[in-house]
Image 1 (cartoon, one colour):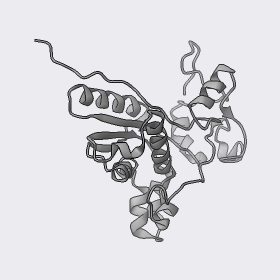
Image 2 (cartoon, one colour; image 1 turned 180 degrees about the horizontal axis):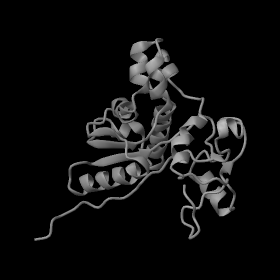
Image 3 (cartoon, rainbow, N blue to C red; image 1 turned 120 degrees about the vertical axis):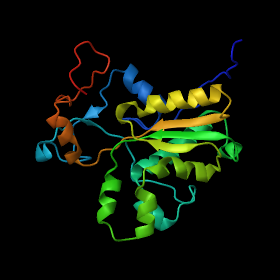
Length: 225
């Protein structure tokens, strides 16, 4: 006897991408064959500390509506920028699906987010200001948990550290749980933000970085990442 599985659809999308504030701008950039990898000093000066200069940069990372997201001003001041991005883009995806965030209040909705190294998390060890807020603001667990709290979601809520595959892992887990009737819906996302050149060096040592200002993930002559 065949096991019944609920149909799963992706109903809304949101995101920030290199030189693109949303999916529409990203598609325009790609179809116009523009390069989202740029060499400039918005993150660090080119060739600083010997780091590669070509990087993909998202815009407007210094803005956050703490009132809308019900974050204490001191918490907003020390909150990881990746957590802020997760909150903002999740709301964007919900609206893109034709829903109001209030429509999800109290629902069995899971949150599956992924990220890797957090610069805020590393610097929090040496911080002695707003100690309690730093703990909450820098923890990557809060990327998912803060969203669940904000929307009063009752499904599982966790942040995965799975390198480059945590996004696909989250999507797979969410799909399986919805198919099996364990969840009514899910929010899945990943975030990555590099503000300091030092984070390049471990990957440089492994010879895993592309030295040019072009990425070729689907090309037959791809060299590193």
